[in-house]
Image (cartoon, rainbow, N blue to C red):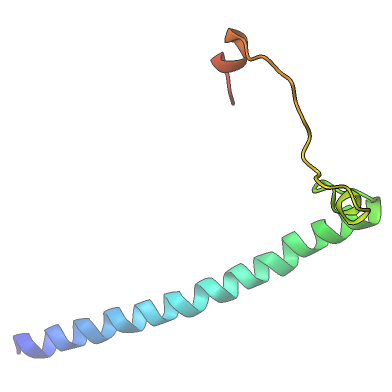
Length: 80
């Protein structure tokens, strides 16, 4: 009887893992298309270019911003 319940338990755990594998992909896909896609479309309509892709495509060698900043003690006290 003990072997039967052990096999039943193993099958149940595998079934749970399969459901988790499927559900997480479904849930993340739904969240992506409900939240991330509309935000991206709204930012594109508003003309936002946070990654400076348009500048990069215009032929600039780099889109990195040189920031000459000397850190002081107050910068590191409350970082968040």
